[in-house]
Length: 444
Image 1 (cartoon, rainbow, N blue to C red):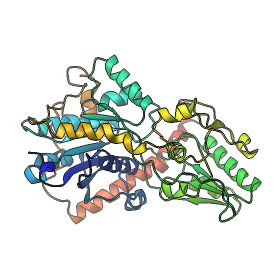
Image 2 (image 1 turned 180 degrees about the vertical axis):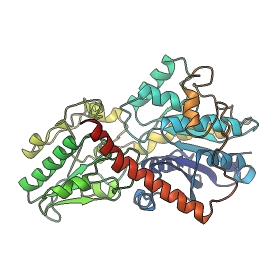
Image 3 (image 1 turned 45 degrees about the vertical axis):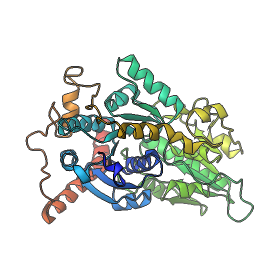
Image 4 (image 1 turned 120 degrees about the vertical axis):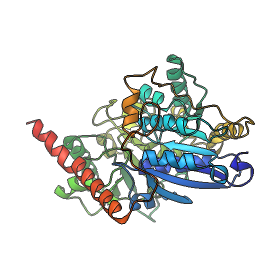
């Protein structure tokens, strides 16, 4: 009998960054059937983007327990979670390779079980690159969540195109949409506020990032009556889902911004509460803003290109340049495009997760339990690709731990914890400080 039949629904979320933890934890609450009480355990996959305490606090999503693990440690925890401690639902909030490794590892640890958790995965935001690669790496989960009708159609087409079962694709919406709708421009209680939602890796070069910063500062000088905000994802040294090699915090040190320009961190929803114009290159924040009917601009200054991700917004009606914004232009979003993105600005958001809830409830109620996990990639279908994916997480071709994989039979002692922190700090310093210098030297 599943744990949910006798007590609170037990849910585990494995995430590899602050953004994916937010997506995974909120998804867990959105897709849980009915008014079921949830016991949520969070697992943070150790790596370059493991969130700091500050990042976790900023995300604002709580759990009944939260701990950092390696892939092997997580698999051993799932193997040990039996009887009263068994999980009903497992959300894999990871990059595609991480999902694939966990599917194979979990398939091994659950191979002799009559019952196992429902495994759910998906994407944290807009899917604008590596569509086939990312999707096939996620294949094998019981539910592969699509954040919009458009994504659901694309996901099914990819799976069916390679002969993979597409039944797992389930249309939902981004789980972190919400907040009060835009009430219109301020009447004097606060200044008109323009927010630029920065992204860690878009654009990815100093010239373009400096250009965007200069245009934002120029807009602030041109409109001294406005508050112009640069919304940042992380502080220098912290990593998010993507690596940020050129933080705006450093670039702004060489600028001379006016008093009405400022940098902010914090929860995006709270920033949007006081936003009158949201500007970005291709951030998911644009969808959050559109959901609340806040005037939203996707910049075309650097072109409309796949590398920037703003090509996803073709047809949205939101594309515009800083020159146009400086002159007062405000794009009007296309209702049909918005509806296909799962934004639901006109209502219906709460019902967006009904199908997922029903499917999970049905899977939990299966009298004979769930069938074994069956990813599309196997040692037979991808013998030259899969072993490398698994090896990155210290797993062999059969999903078992490789020799020398981190042990999970005891908690790390004080010395081991210090070494881990030092190693992670050195790695982040190398990625953010040393590697860009080496690349620039190589271009000379």
